[in-house]
Image (cartoon, rainbow, N blue to C red; front, side):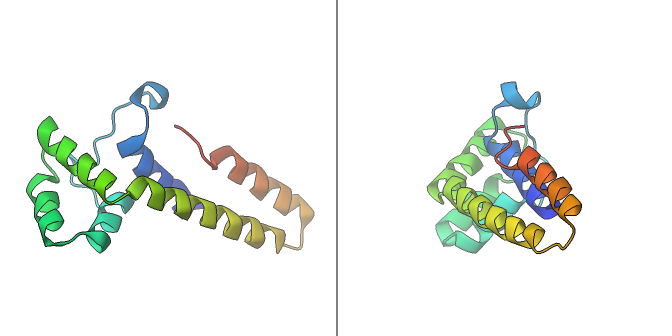
Length: 119
């Protein structure tokens, strides 16, 4: 569940609404090895790889925009949505395998607080 939370955080840093989140994400500018960056590396062709490495880790808003446009071109929003659906189902299954119903209730409560969160 912690890994899922971190992946969500990486996703929201790029695609989240700053008004809702209360901050502007800077993972791209800070050259963070985020989940989105790793997913992009897995999917890029040579042209896209050049765009990614020419612009990632730079504070210039035009560079950040190019990286975000590349993420959209690679359909990373849909990749995240699919990941989120799959991990939710896996976590529910793992939680329900716990023998203690009180533990199940606590874990499900935590999961429901973070599932599809916007900030």
